[in-house]
Image 1 (cartoon, rainbow, N blue to C red):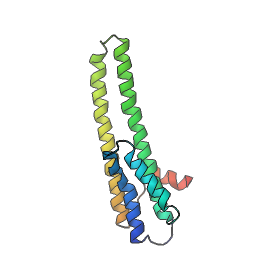
Image 2: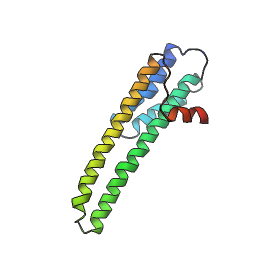
Image 3: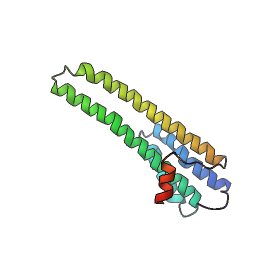
Image 4: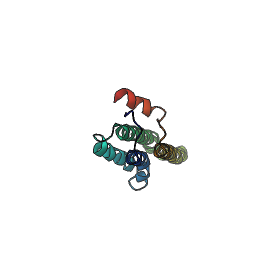
Length: 142
């Protein structure tokens, strides 16, 4: 990261990287990931500060996507298999669990989006922002 304070252009790009989470509304699961990646690829040579924020946004949004795939996708796959194996009787158990995990997935996605938007606000206000685990991971792994 740069030692000097980021200028307005850098703050705008860093905020856009965190705010790219809103693209998930238009391309579920991958919109924000692609947005953060594009910002990182186009700005990494211009500003290490923007590169850091876009990279940690990319890592965080990818993590949220993987968690959603595991929680919702795993539950639904298991639910369909359980219903099939039990010749339909398992549907009485599987469908409520599947609906619950679908709701849980929505809560996880919304929480991730709100957290990313908070990050966008912080960097736009010229304040440092680190995702709880992704920020330190990106710092260690460059």
